[in-house]
Length: 79
Length: 134
Image (tube, rainbow over all chains, first blue to last red; front, side, top):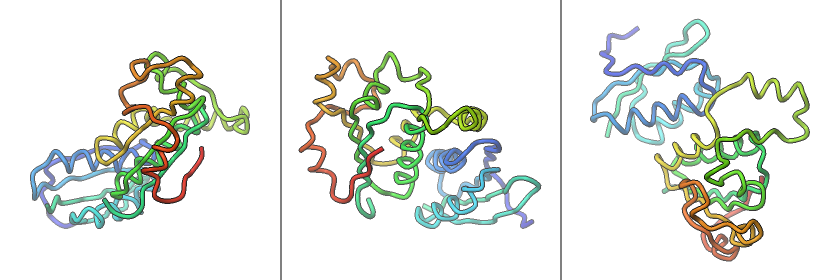
């Protein structure tokens, strides 16, 4: 796993679609440009939704890490 | 805003259909689409300020097994998903004036999620694409 400083971590495990994405959007809106946010999600929809939203909204998907029973998404607010 | 407006007519007032509509709304809002919602009949009833948190049951096809799956799945209440969608995007929720009259309601009787009441022609003024009926 790349060494990147996480500014904020959101544990959205157990939350169904679109909960984890909505939590990420909220955190991105609150953070400063450059903020790195980590979202833990066990929702299968997040695997496509989070990368799609990050691309659409013009942020940076730093890393997607499959874990046991969930996925870790690391996103940097780019604008 | 990108792409065409998502126009939804919400008729049904069961929690599963309102939840499905809320999820569509949140997804569209997240992806930068405008959302234009028209509340009629039982969906309008569900947005009454004094009833919005109450359990409203599920569509008949749910059956006991479906109801159990829905209950177990958890997640946020549909009203909370609509609230989040409104926070992140351009989502307007209008009450159908015909249904408002039928139930003897004024805008003050509705949850603040509802922006205003309007006639059906006004709804189509903003519906610049297909309309989805739920």
